[in-house]
Length: 217
Image (tube, rainbow, N blue to C red; front, side, top):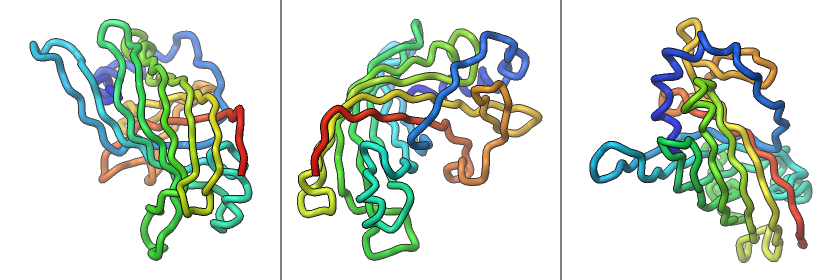
């Protein structure tokens, strides 16, 4: 979602500029990683037009998109999620709309690979704010929005419906001590773990929290 465009600048400047106002602490229901992104520039090649991104990761049991009874049936303490998103941040403001689809997945026949069977789908709309990365050289951004979700027919979440809001923090990898790193809310810097790379490439990390306003099973 137009994150990789700021990575080079952060790699060069972030370690020297982490004395600015610290980010707000954030507690997350789940953690996703951006595994792919494709940016479309304006016809004159001088500005950002749109972006498509795919993220994947897990969300804790007992949260709106992964109720405890679902995790119990799956025999796990979390649910696997994939997010397809379109939109991104303007080059002039660092802020812009984002929309897309969330899928909650269960394992299907092959436990050796990632879950792939859809058990819930959700549409979402929101706003992405990467202005700290664009203009303050802080390797982070935020996202807020609303979603509406329904269980897939015939799945263990059939007839389950929920809608609500979400917010999240992007942690954008930058080079520190010659290692790709994230800046945490307490100003500490941590190197990426082995599972925070996609095909050997450092990935932006998204920590999400969901609220649910209505639901039923």
